[in-house]
Image (cartoon, rainbow, N blue to C red; front, side):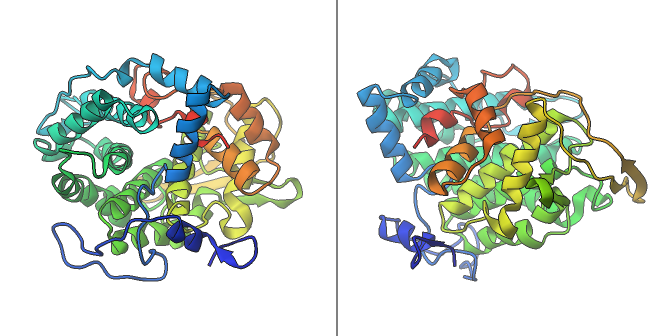
Length: 405
């Protein structure tokens, strides 16, 4: 059990703060089993946002306080946050190979998220209605995610993002939550689960950490959305002991204790993917935190050390590097990286505020490189603010508005 201020657990704080009781029943399946990781009662909202953070943002924006106001202005300026956004649902989404059409999905997800956030913070019905209508449109039509191996990325990234929008809209008049839950279980979860079990029939280390991490995040988010303990436990268990590169000791294979740094698995590949990985693990840890599990601090703050490592290098400073070996392809052909990659060094994504405010405000820890990266990108924007391609939509963003404390 994780503890805050000595005797009071994080989970107890969440429960006594007004978590909504869960049914413990899986939509479209048998009753979910309970185990050590899953909370006895799921807290809602309880993914990337909790009630306290949302309420703080609402109050601070209304008062014109910084940095919340600057974060709010980034949100309002984004065209995806317009309440006139019209969804473009498809029965089949393709990522990778012929006939790709997946941009319609990620653009609609980010429009739904940004409108949901505007509704939660300012309360205007037009934004709530827009987010609800996007969710309902997709859950009434989407049946298939396909393509080449990239279909697993689509199922993971857009799975956890879509579930987070639905969590924000839970209970909104006219939102068909049950149908949306069923879509997540029927369309997204099977691909998430298949990838973690089989890795597209490749060597277990063939796919970089991001591939596992997005699948793990989707499974965890679906578990929370559906009050499904078994799927929640699947995500947490894989983080701790999974065989693939998304498990924490594989995503962060080397700890350089002398410098309180830890090497990220994709550091020898390039920096944009390293920063993306930090963002995905941060999202995973925040969702677990809001259900009472402190994975941010797991294994002697292993993730903190890795995020500091990636931030420090992308600030232009030197970091240590241990030779990293992996197996590739279906036959696990040997590959070796002997130095950190400078490709894309200095890359900016909206992933740092969530870490800065967790470690410095909740935990009262010093994370100088994380904090410097957060300051460099403040106020964080979201989808559509970091380029028109899919990489600009890998994170939901708006961390300054959502997480400042």
